[in-house]
Length: 353
Image: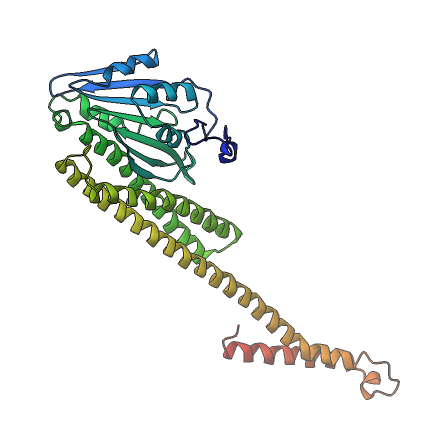
């Protein structure tokens, strides 16, 4: 993953300096607008940033979506027109920032992580989404264009949609809810992978299983870093009254908070399950090692008396009674085979074989 800047590049810069920290993207920033009320809805893809400035003060609800954060000048231009605090814009451009909520004089700011499973189905990919709620408008900043809000857009296009009759704060809630809903798909996918891994470790523990366990642990920790701070942020919105969110919408935010708690508990359970699988793996490897040592010990024990017998007759003494016996060679072999048979029978009766 290539990053255009790192946090260290901001060292020494004054607070509010706009520096993009995140994946290096060369595509042009896309600004789209959805403006609606109960009767009408218009969708516009802006050819210039200035087109969205007209929607700052309208009687309708305006949703301004910005796909792409790598153009600092465009972000600064939108921020200046909507009177967004420089520290807010700084947080928007820092895609490595933890989820948080902050209230300013003219808006409410929330940043959170969009989580999904990559095409290979083995890793969690994250993208930062920042939401700014003002009086009659919502601005969403995404790292790149995605389909996370497609279902919400379809609902907005329906004339009888309940969303069209509510204010910008309800749209703010629905955007958050759309992101949080994807968390369930991620946790369910990881849960299925862990179940398959548990069956695999139970029957054939190997080095690949250990690598999978460590990889899944990293993915769950990554997921937890995104969910736990968001729980605190939504709890703050529910606990601290704000002029930007009506009481009716707060009830919906409580539902989102409960979803996040459920997801967080699921992550904890998955981490515990993964720890149990690690114990199962270590136990399986230990049992496998014990079985190998058991076989080697039995083999060594069986050959010990035979080694003793052959060792005696390997001595270079001239006067040994059996040396001049006609059937001495066959006699030694007979004794050796009898000893071998007796030990095998004994081990089988003891169920060591």
